[in-house]
Image 1 (cartoon, rainbow, N blue to C red):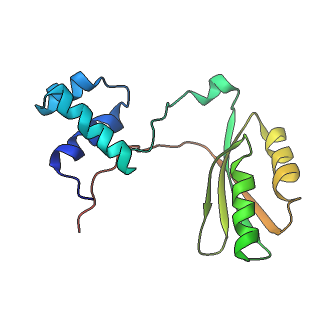
Image 2 (cartoon, rainbow, N blue to C red):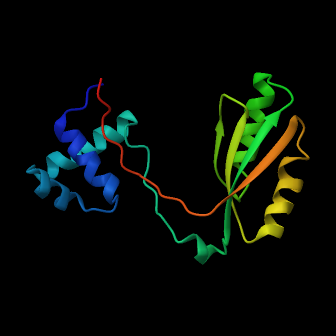
Image 3 (tube, rainbow, N blue to C red):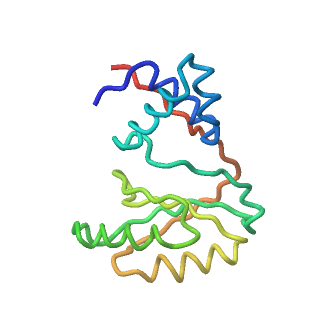
Length: 154
């Protein structure tokens, strides 16, 4: 599947604001609205566009603290790791989870109300799981996000 310059322009605009009306995107790129719509639908069908997400103020959801859990697993059997990743990804407080290389095996970004909630989450949802050998926690003081992705140079 090959994306062209126009596809990347459409994607760039949608990454800035996924709610931008098709008509506005088409006008900014210089396409007919129907052609723009067809391109967007084609990219959705191909799996290039996999959804859109809304960014919310976490404080409005009662989040007062964000943290990173760095975990070492005692076993690295694929089935156990896959099940662990699937189960942990379903925990409400988990925003992202990554299986990584290096000193730790798994890194989880979590959101909680306060330090007591963080402690309870660590003890009740992570350290008591089969296969978790060690957990280290880092509090996030500040974060910046970049939701836009451009094609990487070859």
